[in-house]
Length: 261
Image (tube, rainbow, N blue to C red; front, top):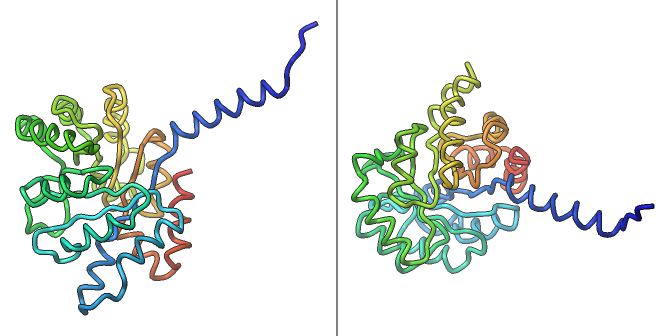
């Protein structure tokens, strides 16, 4: 007669469940640019950006994202260093990799540096890198940032050629640019997500981590998560802050986290 040790079985099940949960868990990084925009509209320190960062983490956010543009129209140079002092989750600094940006990364050493191709005057990021055309430049920058012990993510369109190019330059992750998905989601979700599923599966096969961001909200996030369950992180700012005006920051963050479960 075979004896079963219930404690051992339960322990093994718990370990397998924990591993599966870690594999499928997608972190929510809150982009606080819009909070800084609101503060800058009147000067002073209301709302208090540092306190908002603390509260986002207290309410469940697993990361904080900033994009410090050269004109400082939202996140300022001082903000980057002050947030770094209080951030207890993963600090993600995104931006165009010019000398100013690379100085931030070298001095702050955030958990993640997300490289975006948009010029300084752009209102918001609106395309991913051409990783083939910019292969040499990106490879050099990725190597430099990695030498600081910082994880690198590259903003990328859902194209197999682009994803393969991202692998060649040595990045740790890609961040899928999701505006086209968000735009097409209302009329045809399956068609809107198709290229992202293909690109995501390829990235996973190549050993790249997968982030996503731009125009993700409470309407489309759950569907994207269902189709790309292995995403590592989503970065959300504009929609989340807009929702928080009606539902409150704590409740809104919890609602976004619910979409990722």
